[in-house]
Every structure is written in structure tokens, then in C-alpha cells.
Length: 198
Image (tube, rainbow, N blue to C red; front, side, top):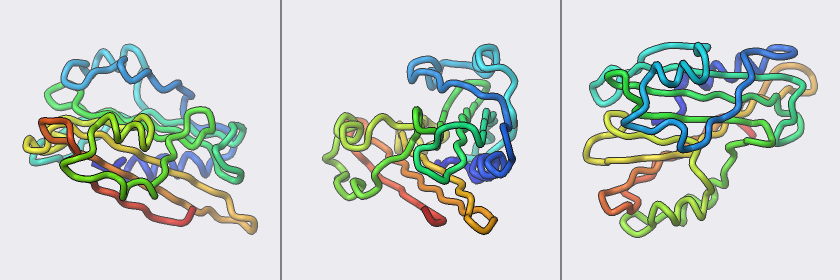
């Protein structure tokens, strides 16, 4: 499951605004919200009302999604010329958290990753720990029904940028990597996509 197109569009739209858009937030630590345990109300209680609420269909199941997002022209971006923005999206099935993903182009908590290292991931051999050692801590994680039951757990890496052009206009870039694991914690499959120009 990639960072949904709706979230990517939201980040891009926020980035186009002058000043600030959305409410600023700090990414929760990785153990704050647990897949298969945390409920919708627990997240809203801690983070407040989301900027967006919606539904997605995944593996034949209706999944509720909520999104928190923030962009500002005053923040420090990872790279010069980028409008820094961050978004956090949660997915719920039967009111229980089954997926979460974070993306940021702010320098302090950016989610950029080196896609050139993807070829080093070997199906049936590379372990979960080796993936993290190679690419860093993931920015997304999922369990069924966000992934097929046969795939088990998955996590991923997401990065989106919006850049102002010198003569006006905007240039967008995004890249997403999803990695699924088998019951032994070995890489089962990788799915990568990118679009736009960096």
C-alpha cells in the first residue's frame, strides 16, 4: 500500500499555500500506536481531530482512513527549494489500527531513503533487521487486511516533495517502497514506484 494518492495530493496542495497550512504535529514514536491493538478513538484523543477522514478499499475490505498534515514556507526543508511538509495517515478496520504511514520533507524528521539500495534486498534471504540496517527505520507499517493474509506484515518507506520553480509553478516528486515479509521475517516481496522529478 503506497502513501495514498489522496494524501500525496493533500501534501502537494498544502505545500502550494503561502505561510502555514494545517496544524503542526510531532510524529509519534514507533511504539505509541500498535497495529492490531490501538483504536480510532485512542488516536484522536491523543492527536486531536484529523484534517481528512475517508475510506479506502483494500483486499476487498472497507478501511477507514484519517490524515494529519502540515506545511509551511518557514520551516527547514531537507533540500533547498523544497516547501517542507509532513503528513501522517492511519488506517482502521473494525475500529482497530491496521496501517500507519508518515511522510516528511522537513529536515529534522525527513523520510527520504536511498532507492539505489533496493536491489540489495533479496527475496527469501534478507531479514527485517537487515532491511532496517540498509534503509533506516521504516516510515509505514501494515497488517492484514491492508496486506493480503498470505503476505502477513509489511512496512515501507515514503517520500514526497513540492518544489517552487524559479519562473513560477511547482514541481512534484514522490517515491514509495513497500516490503512484505514471510512468517520467518524474510523479505517476501518488494514494490517500488516513483513519479515526477526530484
